[in-house]
Length: 268
Image (cartoon, rainbow, N blue to C red; front, side, top):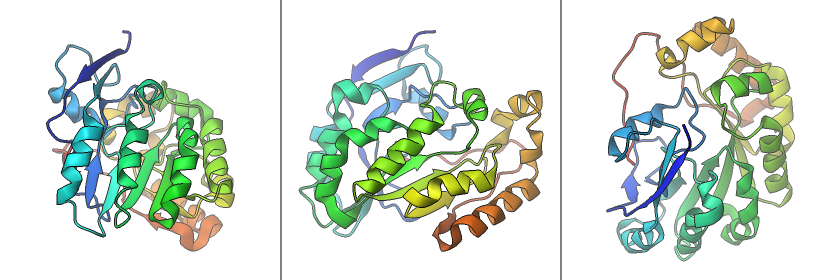
């Protein structure tokens, strides 16, 4: 099924966050062209007016910059804002629409706010000039859940190759931008090699476990990766990452039990 990209108008795009350490989130797009198979954000599918499944549609919130400009007035000084929680702010549609860049230009006008970006796209390097203008109040994270390209192709078949993400992280770090690597959900990997590859270019490393494992259990078993469902595997991998990376490692979550549970729903 081809990807459907359509323009929509959003009523609001600046929302309070339930994510620890994040006060507000901004999602310039709804849906995601990368469509990672383990992603929790597919619950937002109910807001999409169309038959396309998760990963095969992107709703472009073309009025998002205008909404941000208006809604920032209710954001208190000192708040931290994340782009983004249920979409990727640098997915391919950003090349044309430049919503994320335009939103960042508006956020620059609020020097009392902190900004965190999280993406798996090397397109993020495009905005290095803008990131520099934020100084220390901005950080950019690359999502890198494995060091094995074969694993990436199974669980993130439409996402950018891992080497391009490592390169983007390096380029941002070398440009003087504060960077972090998000190793989550931690997929089958060699944790020592993964840690060593991000070590030179990440000021911080966040590690998270696989949530909603029932979504990809069949894939894990088909490819002989079911061992990662054992929490002991995750804790051993975290221990290796801590040995390699030291105090830069922050463990933000543990794997969820295999039983199916009602998922929490972050604001969109």
